[in-house]
Image (tube, rainbow, N blue to C red; front, side, top):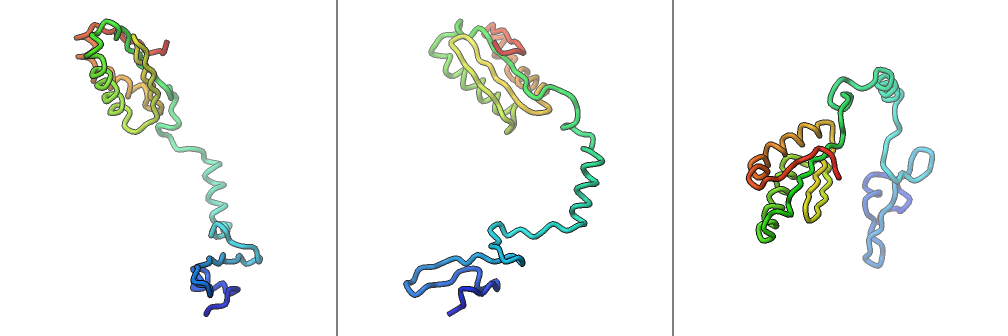
Length: 151
């Protein structure tokens, strides 16, 4: 049987008790406190790298470029569509929105006459334009109108 006060790797995993239950022993840090998170202390070289990165700032890229981070597309005129077809059309709009967003955070609000879709991210405007292009045939066929702002 192992010593419950032992902090060797074998002792820190699992120690069976006399009743057949398993207890977990928490390893100790060098200062005697329990090491709950299992993190190693940060070295001075790591601190120097972080300080240097903070001084130089972010590299140029999509997160540093100015642009809208939330863009909307509102489709109006859904109340002119046959209610039996409307459910399928809403499903097609929703599927196109999920495809255009590609995993980015979205907002979706629907009423009887409108659908408003918002896409978040540094390339949100490009994604909304992609969505508008994907829905262009449906929009034209049903005589819907689109806006870039929510109502």
